[in-house]
Amino acid sequence: MNSDKKRLTRSEDKMIAGVLAGIAEHLDMDPTLVRVIYVILSLASIGFPGILVYIILWLVMPER
Image (cartoon, rainbow, N blue to C red; front, side, top):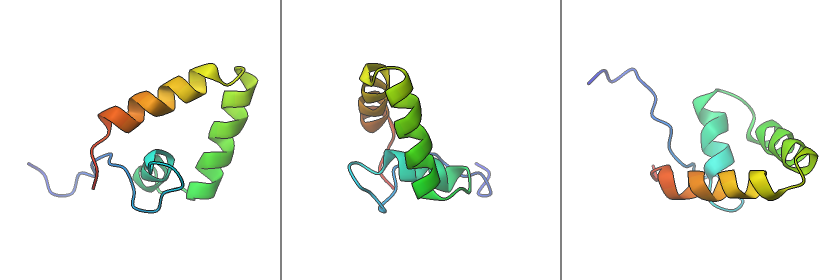
């Protein structure tokens, strides 16, 4: 396996489960920015799909 590849994992810099911080680390972005974008998108979709996606990612993404 190529050791240069980054795996998408939950971060230890977590507010709830580390899902969004893990995505931010994977994309080399600021975790706060990813969290704000996620909240805005979730509110724009009336919250439910955002919450459901977060829970699914929480279950699927491995811990570091």
